Amino acid sequence: MATYLLSLCFSTQAQNAQYGQFVPYFGANPGFATTSRAWYSYGGSGAIWTNGLSQVTSLNSSDWTFLGASDTYSPSFVQGDYIVIRIFRLAGDNTDSLGILASFIWGAATQLSSSGPANIAQSPLRLGGNPVAALSYPMPAVASWPVAFTIENGGTVVPTWSYCLGQINALTNASFYGFSVGAAVVDFTNSSNFYFGLDPTVKVGGKGAIDEDGDDDGGEEEANEPPDA
Image (cartoon, rainbow, N blue to C red; front, side):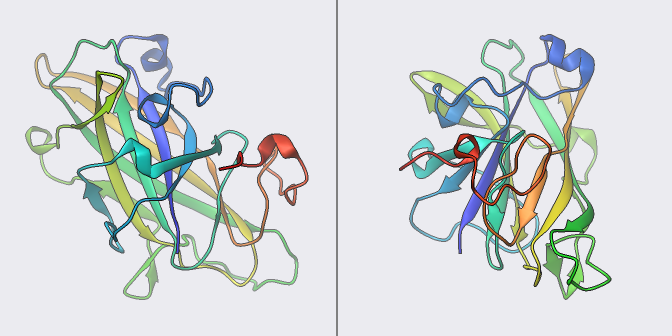
């Protein structure tokens, strides 16, 4: 059982807000707290996740190991693994009173083998035996949207919102899933609204990373492999 986290940064002032995009990946050198559009694996102790959508209210930077940029890499999820989404504000933005409504939508899977079943569940997540293809947190009115917790990064406080989506229910055959993450951001100080989205590829089952075309490379391209621990 493993836990993988997708880290996404937004800015209410940069051009990213104009185009509705999360901040691009610029390399992992800044560390976990400030790296956007990147996958990480959990190496901490203790079970802090539950099956089903829940908000995560604290994260330790030292517990997470960089795996790769989300544009070119996906962890290979297997049954029992957890998927966590972390959304944080770009350092330098001056708005501290922010709330977020986060949404997560699964697209249809593409099998990597023609010998698989004819029908595939719309989502690799399940609750009560049924696929969970759409999630949204929270559901209350805007005034109740959760504010951030913080992560320290070299003395800089990074406001963060994080969500555990639940456990993977693995398929018999390896498959790629289309997956969309959306964040509606409200600034409570002036009622301004901002919207961001990303659609990474998520791999369930099998081995290896994904190349720039979204294909299974079987782990042959070293550029897409996670770095040595």
